[in-house]
Structures are given as structure tokens and as C-alpha cells.
Length: 173
Ligand SMILES: [Zn+2]
Image (cartoon, rainbow, N blue to C red; front, side, top):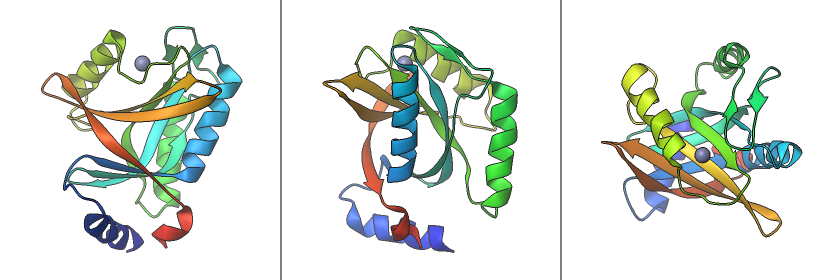
């Protein structure tokens, strides 16, 4: 399976054994375009891929959806549409790409989770254990004409930064 080989590759490459998120360059490109389109309103999406221990590989993105609501402080996804898209990706990727986390924008800049983000993460951790007891939250913040990205893991009521690394699709095959 290509995924297992990529994880082996990453094990050798990275210095630490924990806390790495590998994200496909195409996912960042598509989400940055979406972020720019909604600016100065927030938008977000769901990250799809797979994980092994503390390594997450993000291979696809499901956007906020056609009925999502966007505001300056927060957004509300079109959850039903997202669920269908997540199921479709899972089937079409031969059950490799599942839910691994959330991504959203901070049009005003900051890459740190807000208090609102903390409540969201707490809710996901407590009430959706089947999905993610240690929610992953990626944030892209606007600044100096470009979007920057950070990723956080929520556990025991605190966020820990993950090492964000970008890969090109060819490397996973
Ligand atoms: Zn936020």
C-alpha cells in the first residue's frame, strides 16, 4: 500500500517521532484559493487522509460546502454536504482517505487557536469520540499578502503545535 511506504519514508526523514502533519501541496493551494475568495470572511473545511501514531498525512480537502455560513468571526459548515463528500472520497480512495481534522482561516492574521477554537476542539473531543478524541486543527492566517499555516493537536485541554511539512503528490506513489 502506498500509504504505508510513505509513512516509512517519513519515519526516516523526520527528526522527532511525534507531531508531524504532511499535507499535499494541492490541498494547500486549493484551500488558499478558497480562503482568498472568502476574505475577509472566514471559511474552513475538513482534512482527509490517514494517520499513524502522531503522523498525519493529508491528501484531500472537503470545503465548507454550498450552504455554509461565513462571518468575520467564524463560519458554519454545510455539515450534510460535507458528510456526503467525506463518504465519497473514502470510497473513491479505496478506503484510504478518512477524516483526520479540520482547517479554517483567520482572516485577521494569527495562527494560534482562539478561545472559540478551543471550545470547538473540546466539543469534538468530548462528544464525537468515534471521530477524534484528539482533534487536529489547522489554521491558515492572512498576513503580508500571503497565507501562512499552522496545525495544532488538542489533547488534555491544551493545544500542541505540529510540525507542518508539504509534499508533492508524486512522492506518495
Ligand atoms: Zn480559529
